[in-house]
Image (tube, rainbow, N blue to C red; front, side, top):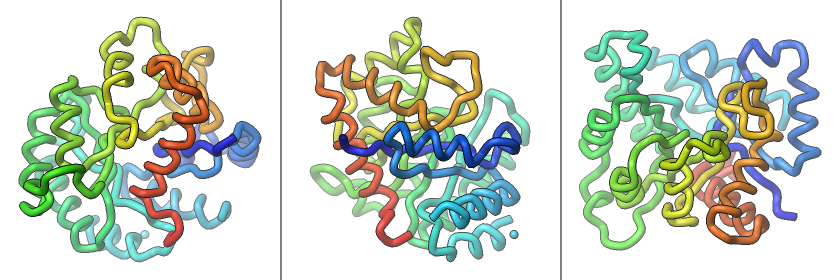
Length: 250
């Protein structure tokens, strides 16, 4: 059985403070071969690197962290106009700086987009090098919009721009019709799977703490929706994750 990759987890969360090793062990037992643990600020990015070291400290600080051999992307970065924990102007300025950092370091980006689709798309289009945006055919992957919540038109544009789209636990929810429809129509070679743990646990664990082992439920649901063998979805999404994150050099 081809191993799965959880492309977006928050193993630095306090929710794993007492049993992180068990969580990682269960992921291995469930066939999860790699986990990309994602920081949301400088302290959590440091913790993410600490976790990566055990199992395989502002922009200046992030740049230094990006030089670490276990870093595979700059993220998660982006805009959140739902919670608005920072003023929108400050979010936009920080996002622009972080995108520039990714370019300087030659790393892909992990994009957070919540209730900010238009601004996220505008900034990504502004950031992408013009040859990348104008090249015919599939563009070289430059990042991923994690836990994608846009519509199909946005998804198609995102793919044209060279991004992957990642789906998480909501694809298993019976009332998530738009997400399920998206799962059927996104090109399989541009699709990633994630848990976004400890959030968004899939069925049959909805409402509980999520963990990387549960990415298999996301994979199986995508396979069901696309009328494909689960093995095909596992294999292709693993290939996609390795292409984006270049694990061989981390």
